[in-house]
Length: 230
Image: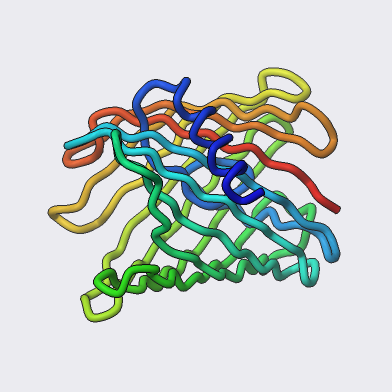
């Protein structure tokens, strides 16, 4: 079952133009929001990215999220990579906690997220990541921003940012723009345009294409399949 799941992600990503990595979040591809599952509900998410920089690479991130309370969600996701002409490689597993600190239904939202990425290979570093999440939504649009901090074990940390905006173009369809970058002088940034669709009460699909700014990837494509499992 595990192998079939990865092969399905590879097959789907192979039909995309050359691309980049998707990050956590159900409402956007690169940016997190403070929208969390309600207590007792959860999601299964299959993310797949294809990036073109110095070489072509596929990246896969299967994830499970479960609402422990209405304000806290636990997540577990894995990272796989596949360079052209090589077999897929298991990179890491990452448990995470997500918190919503403002009431549900409020237009302005604030949340926090923390994860610890455990490297599979001994020569790679474990990575700690935290994010402060700000959001605002009106009847037909959602805007969100993240302040990010990432620290590999044994190295100094790096501050970054992410921002996104999406606008409804129909009852179940939205389009938007996302940006992910670093505050460091030698960091990279990426800009992406995205499509976000709800095809049933339990299934959503997000897809985006973009390119790097400064030292970012030459071209990028990302997609995510999202199933509500309870």
